[in-house]
Amino acid sequence: GCSRIWRKAFSIPFLSFGNVIMRVRVNPDCVCLLASEFGGEVWIGSNCKINDNATQCIMGRGYFGVDTEFPDKNYYFFSINQFSFGKLLTAVGVGETPFTKLLDF
Image 1 (cartoon, rainbow, N blue to C red):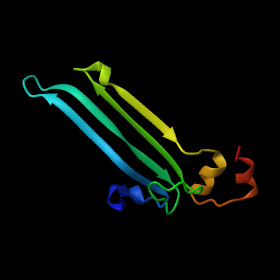
Image 2 (image 1 turned 180 degrees about the horizontal axis):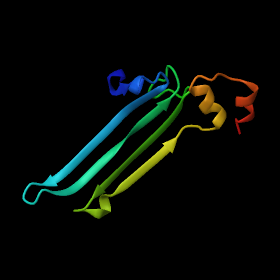
Image 3 (image 1 turned 90 degrees about the vertical axis):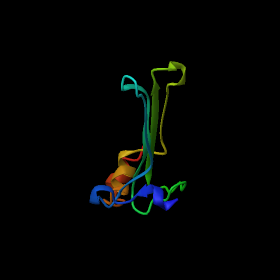
């Protein structure tokens, strides 16, 4: 829900982060890193809602995990819902102009 989204991240009105994970597993005997997972979502646009396919928002998602103890459990996942330079300019608040429509390809 809304508690998992950091809206206006770093006081930037069109930037939000959500579903961020950071996990590490260490061996206490040698303080060795056994596994780690990192990832999250980045939303660019105003009034973006999680699980909302709003066309004015660009949402990128990326997660990866590394396990030195069980390497077959390593993974990565990256996706983006839409991208063009025109959509990026619209999402950051430049507005829709003939120039932004020209960049929508």
